[in-house]
Structures are given as structure tokens and as C-alpha cells.
Length: 97
Image (cartoon, rainbow, N blue to C red; front, side, top):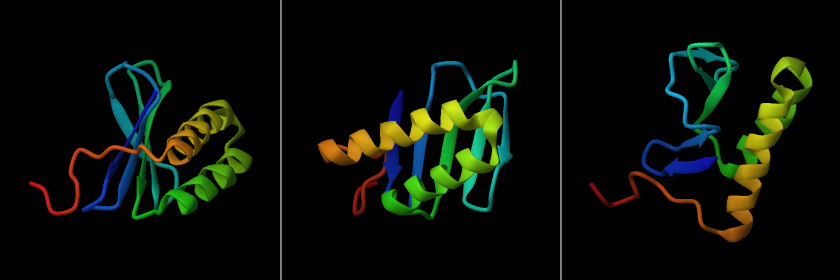
């Protein structure tokens, strides 16, 4: 599992596995789910959210989407762990290109 953060575009991406993304579907206006070819959740993109609001969005989604609860809980734990370690990395950092 890998958490990356695009500071310029304010996107947090959680990669839940190594399976390629086959399809994406918005769960809310701020959360996009990535699925593999078999329909398993393999990633999440959290748009324009701070880490704290991303965690809150995942908690809310876990209550409204019981079919995704386990994956959302793992994603939330990964983000919380990265925040605790203060080591979220980004593909694009502010001021770098």
C-alpha cells in the first residue's frame, strides 16, 4: 500500500495494491475509486482534501458503502500512519517541476 500526495493539485492517492487500474468511478465529488479488471478496489484519489478531511471522508464513506468498508478502512489507516510518521511523499512538490 502506498500513499502519495500531489501538493500542487491537492490530491491524495492511495494505491491499495499492484493490480493495474481498469476503471474509475466517483464515489463522491471528492473521492474517486479505482478498480481492477475484476472489479476489486485498487486505489482511491482524494481530491482537494487536506489529510484530515480525507480521513473524515473515508470514515463517512465506510458507513455509507459497506461493500467497500474493509478497503476504505485500510486506506484510512495508511493515510493516518503516513501522517503519524510525517512522511507523505509527493510526485509533484510545491515549487518543483
